[in-house]
Length: 450
Image (cartoon, rainbow, N blue to C red; front, side, top):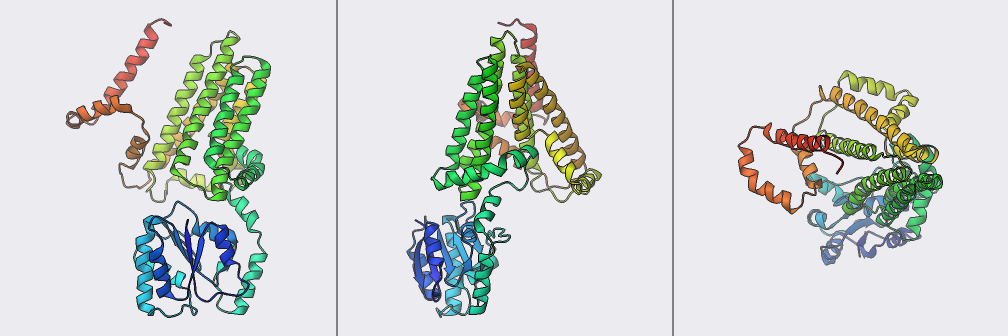
């Protein structure tokens, strides 16, 4: 259980202790820096710990953002600082320094938590400070300032801010205007019932698999049901991320499940649609496989491009200048987000065409749309990359390698041929890969269906 250490003199009528307990903290009190250091040493090293000024005034969600986000070893808002196990050593050093410099005197004249954050900054520790926006988090120095802070808290509905922040700031047109206005309330409903983002992600996968099964029936009713269920699956797909942001339930496993299940859902649906077409006497398996290959290539390129440009500096190319100019015209932003066919627009198109047309038409529209989107994004990236300045690193290659699921056979070959491969010219490895791909394509072209 995480522990919060309240420092300084308690303020009559303050809700800070109850707020911390509602966030899952066990609350202990310390009158001065020396006592705070002692209590800090008593907290097990594998637990989160926070130091909070007893005079803190602010929204509960401001405390939640500052003290419970699992992604950051050290985080702070005015009047409060927290450390996860990875940041405990830095926090302990900072508190010890403040204790020795202050001589263990009472901390009523200023905020120990804020002094500790200053010490952490001086040590070069990375302290995350969440963007609070209209939320209030402050340590008033006198009764008048406290009353003003309380009035500011009362003037802002932190639940409305929390709901709004659960939605991505930048998303596709379909998601922004047709899903997020109500999916955020589904996320809150899930949070209040103790559901986790991973459970919602799994529910989305199951819904999509049922949709694929409906499409595989090959009947008009099955196609209509498949389209409806595919949209329902996408609603749940948006809900899991909004639930994670609403309740700050972030995890590496959750991110992996979300990305992996998205591909599994989409490709399973393609297969179901192809099976349904086959039941009606139309063989569209080549189109289904082409859609899978095209989408796989798009996702790999998107991921590797973002990783490769992670450390890039500002771009001054004419392409970037034109993009910035278009951003000032509101409707062009949405048009450009739509034509790249993000998952929302893509799934909406697939669902509608499945319900109203045939699988063949659906795959034709999907392939044409995705091919155009791929050409558009590739052209823009090439033009931007011509003048973009970035340090070349192995970040993208390493990230892709981390995602690879090669298996023991491939890993064994890699280990056996790693040293000989290093002596080959740079083009040898991609040339060998292309040769293998050419052999597979040639075999499929010059042999029969069997």
